[in-house]
Image 1: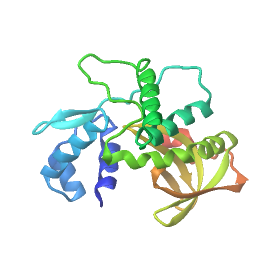
Image 2: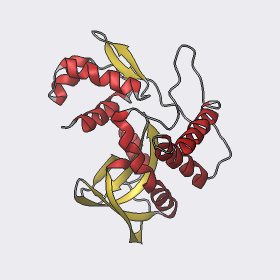
Image 3: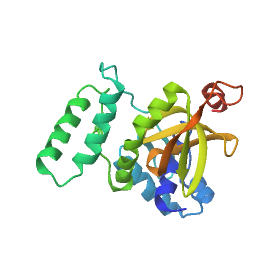
Length: 218
């Protein structure tokens, strides 16, 4: 497992809210405890709400959700794409505009005393590649609304999916879907999509394949 995949795996584990020791996570992932300590530091620096300490254990607070801003879906997509793409670009004027927009969004985000704010839309190098996935958001959003099946390619393997949910957590956008290729639910990061295309068929709710069924597993 490479470092990026390991960080995603740790995020998935921590998001449940339970306390996990570095020793247990290291054993499950086949790495050293020192590596887990470094990974926790990377996650915290990237804006993932990690809590805990060495020798005690780690967990994560509930993800920060945006209050209503009266934005359309297309406007929200544009914000993420612009902030991710322009904020890290060499175009000084556009990068400055992205940071200004980020600051305005931060002004309406919930605050907790004693918790330093992490700039909205920006990430450390560990998750900088997540920006690539934002380009797929309009396609997935439209498919969720229309109940349109999609074919996504992940790690050179095509999957025919029923997209059910777009989820933002820990600086990463993910999609929850029913995977018809594996006959199971699948959650994947958008930046892992190598190719995406709508399929002719639509889908209807079926027992065992609905979003409520996936949520009941947690």
